[in-house]
Image (cartoon, rainbow, N blue to C red; front, side):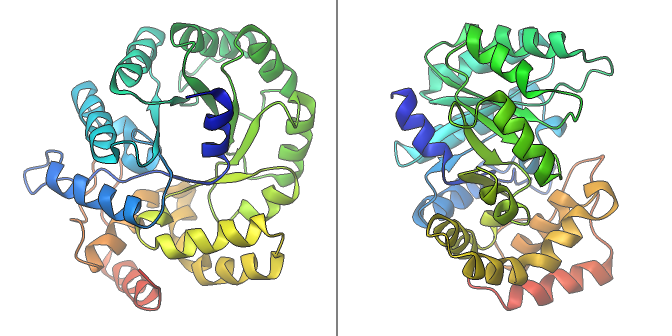
Length: 300
């Protein structure tokens, strides 16, 4: 796969699948496969196993590999696979090489969670991952407001396989400036805060967005990307209005229930158990009822 093909795959709905758990707390592989097939049948073309909606940081190393393997196997060439990698440098590099062995075309590098992250250190971290898999497209996941566009450009100068950016700061003006400082046309800009921010970020240069909502209502995610591509802002905002409360519940209290809300909606539809792993938690009864009421009005 060429980098240009990878770029096209990013300029779309970039789905972040959930990781379903069985009653004993293990990864439910059968349900995972069923949920992946549902996404593929809905026309999803880019899957990101090991994203935050997939509870990346709550999975063991073995489980992260399992989730990537299940996704690649179930996709079978029907979608591009972008595996989430992170933690310490050796772990991130090993995960990227594992993704390559599975036939994935890209890796998304999680924002480093080390308490001491310098801008030069950020570049060095991503350079180590990108250099280990020069055949794969590399997509940094940016959540640090201290990082400058110049540092991203420096990384891409050293590693031409850095082809896209998942930008996840809730500030459209900051995004517009960052993208232009780094090189607007040099990268594919993915709105990393999903559908709620996609209309604003598309107006500033994004061409794709990540989605956890797509697990629940892929029709709505497709409607939004198609409206944004067509430049039909009113149509995009009609989708935005339909999903607004659901996404507000996900974002409340520092996104404490981000995954829990998605899994609750899937449980309402009979597609997945609602179980999440600490430090996430299950929803209180009143929020569960609200999620059920929202989902009842959506196409699935």
